[in-house]
Length: 225
Ligand SMILES: Nc1ncnc2c1ncn2[C@@H]1O[C@H](COP(=O)(O)OP(=O)(O)O)[C@@H](O)[C@H]1O
Ligand SMILES: [Mg+2]
Image 1 (cartoon, rainbow, N blue to C red):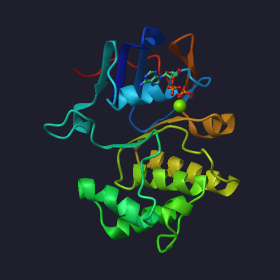
Image 2 (tube, rainbow, N blue to C red):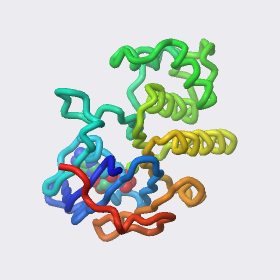
Image 3 (tube, rainbow, N blue to C red):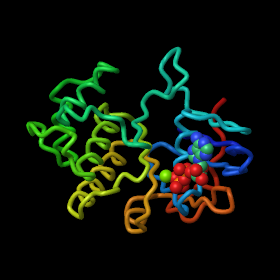
Image 4 (spheres, protein in one colour):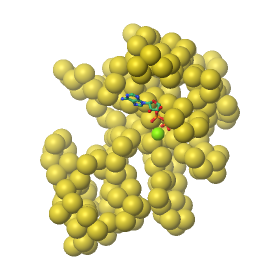
């Protein structure tokens, strides 16, 4: 089942073409890797998919089950693109709780469990202003996954993480895949991509090219709308 379909998408900023003729289908239960050099448009691609920005041309279709009624934005998406703005004077738990209060879907216990999953101590009294980069990254990851979203859009999820944390998060993402979640991720580390991804795309010459697949993707075709 296709969750996200990109049909002939084009995006430029101030007349400078960034992405052109982007065609891709993202299917449920797979992990997709997006690679490409700095500034090639990986984060922009994710922002397009999340509808934070609009394409100049073409269409990005999201499976109707992934919208809440009356919403223009995909629900069921856990998103880590830019690290969320946080309250420096609050603890990690308190910050996550504030974000959780927007949706009112999860309990304090869910937040604590998520913190443990990403390797943070939920009882820590340390304020976020003294968090290391890696700890902030874990908070951003926790925020993206804490509501048990079915689709995860993770831009550089392993940034600033130490080796053990990378292993832990890799395991977590593979577990999520087994649970049927769909994951789109970018990484500069080829090992992350090789270990995790079913399909790998590269942004090159302003378009998205399929680099490698472990299952048939060329047979995929538009399934909805
Ligand atoms: N809102 C914006 N306005 C103008 N230019 C932008 C905007 N967002 C991204 N860009 C430009 O698009 C290019 C690709 O950015 P990005 O997707 O962040 O690259 P990366 O592949 O490193 O994630 C960069 O040159 C960036 O400056
Ligand atoms: Mg980026």
